[in-house]
Length: 456
Image (cartoon, rainbow, N blue to C red; front, top):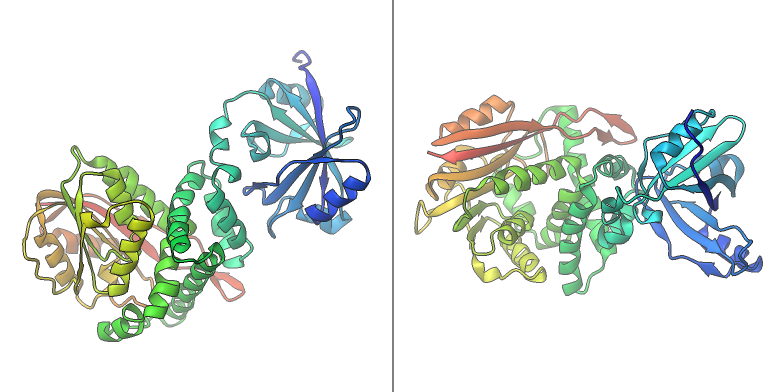
């Protein structure tokens, strides 16, 4: 057995239904010092510490569930508000865990960084005769994760907490929060959208509503495809009238909702990470000029211009509302929109004034939006210099309010890209999590395709 490590009492943990009511009740017992609430998004709880000026009084941790998947919700259902653990500090968490394991304690999970303890590692251990004990380490190895915790990412924390209450998005958010890099990335996306909404005098509740509406709009169309095998539209002129030229839909739901899915939908998060970590990071020298076909919500353009502050861009989109929205996203986030030439045009018929003048190109989820994707690829390739790098994404078997062309395999898309004077550096499929079909979870056949290619 190991020698006994030092354990220092820290607090008693209570699960409560309502933090406000609980702190009020503790005030009657002489508790006069309460910390600000801290959100732990992984455990779906909100935490407040309570203490008294009298040194002999124990410090209390009040834990309120913050979602249906909260780790403490079942405790409330079974027994109401109650004490449920005792916490001790340990200088060496690994040694303390080994010592307690030798005495019949079993860890309930691997140690993780605690937002309530500034990122210090914590673990819960259970003993059949005693119950639940929490250990908090004193080392700094996990401090970096504190910067990714709720209090360091305020926009992401607030919005994700709202969205986690929704059945369609809760599982996706729980899945994403398992990644250490996720919260700071989500903060970037969500704060960019929030900056635009603040400039327009709108609030974060409206942002949450936009991404929920967009998610359910997609789900309705994809559910229809799962049942019928057919896309909702085949005619671009009709899609243009009903969607791209529809100001209320584009500026109220489609564009802000699609922007936020880059942080909320696991598959969009994965594609954006690959865009940053593989495509943007893969340039030997900063590109002088980039073209983006289908600038849409502007997030990819914003990421590119921030990464390469001396670069310029050409942004082409069929929707004047997309051009307006993406330019506003740039300005709201401190990027000079004059670095971009915005052009309203059908990408399948675009005739540029100058060809082969771009060192980089992005065509994100455009090919499925047109009747003839080969024409879009042809126009796109004409703008690229030989050896220019391109990031191209599309979808397979994925219906949406504006999807027209149905791809059926990765090989089909690979061949189409190669056939338009590109050489593939990388091609892969990213699959989403399951789609909710009404009240049931069903199988979503969607496959997201992405490629990094080089112009010949």
